[in-house]
Length: 77
Image 1 (cartoon, helix red, strand yellow):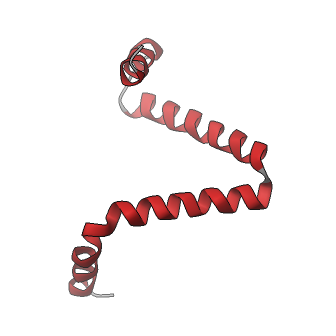
Image 2 (image 1 turned 60 degrees about the horizontal axis):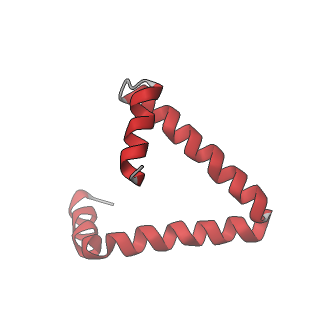
Image 3 (image 1 turned 180 degrees about the vertical axis):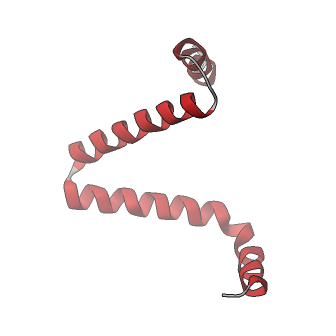
C-alpha cells in the first residue's frame, strides 16, 4: 500500500479510532473467555498488567515507591 492510500485510510478512520480500539479489545477479551475460560483469562490479564508495570518502571526509570505513589494518586487513595 502506498503512502497516499495509507494516509487516506488513517484520515477516514481517525474519527472512529476509539470505537475501533475498544471494539477490538473487547472482541479479543470475549474470544479469550470463550477459548480458555474465565479464570485463565483473569490470570493472563494479571500477568499482562504486571508486565506493563515492570516495563513502565524500566522505561521511565522509576523506583517502586514512585510507582506506588502514582497508582495511589490515580485511584484517589
